[in-house]
Image (cartoon, rainbow, N blue to C red; front, side):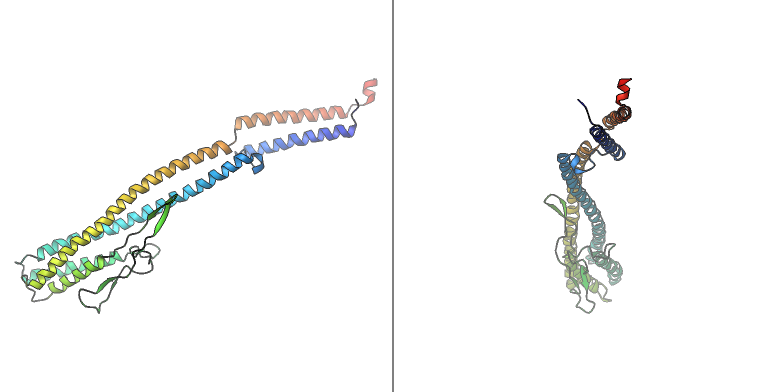
Length: 304
């Protein structure tokens, strides 16, 4: 059977193009380390990769959210712990002031300390974050948690002007975690403090005065109530931190599994690729040699 020169050339060109295409693809794969260069290389594997990468992005966002919430909770806990310290110091002073043997000078001397503690509690309640947002105002982050009306009557000058809204952050599939707490109720305690301070600073204050003793008892009971309120919020932070740790660990395990699966599907087997590249290079060289040799043949070679 005779083969026309045009047929031979077309066949050889097609073979060269196939070999060169495969070599180029293997070279790209070895350069990038990925065996899937375009979706059409392995459609099913590409779909699996897309799903795994999408899930990995979602899990990664959960982990970032958890880290952000943990930082916020830790900062909030620091401020609340400071408030607990202030209220503990105020409680000691109220216990001392309740002693009927105190002189007017003794009672007057407590005013500066109690005033400083009151102002510290007010300041910490209106703490702002690095973005200038109030952290204890619920969802009204542009509004201070507490307001002070200097012209108001003693015992009613402090008020809570935030709300009790929760700033929920998504930390898992269908799972949210509040990233804030409020100081609603602190205004009541500050008003109790304010009343006691006003009575204690009077020059003629009498330790046995029933009005003073009633105000001190109210302030002492209010201190215990406020301590319970704030300590309860700190305890909530501890529980939330434990939940966050567990979720973060679970998400990390899922992320690790995703990354392993992505590597298994997408990563190139360099040993296999190198063997294939060597084989196709050899085939390409052999094709070139065969093409050159056959192209130089003619009937005269046979006749001779």
